Image 1 (tube, rainbow, N blue to C red):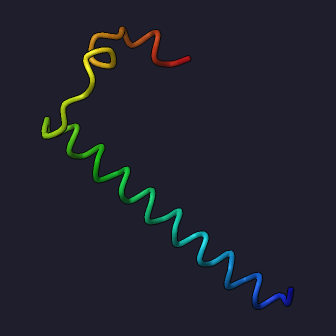
Image 2: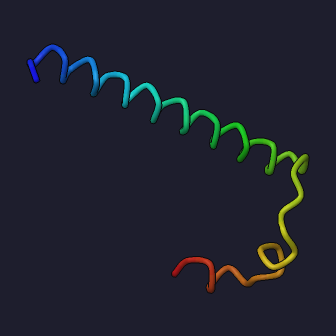
Length: 52
C-alpha cells in the first residue's frame, strides 16, 4: 500500500473517531440536562463502585 493511500485510510479513521466522540459528547450533554434517563442500576450505584 502506498503512503498516500495509507494516509487517506488513517484520515478517514480519524474522522470516524471524531464523529463518535461528538456523538458521545452530545449524549452526555442530554444526560446532564436530564433528557435521557439512565438505567436504575447506574443511578443507584454509589460513585466509589463506578470508578473501578
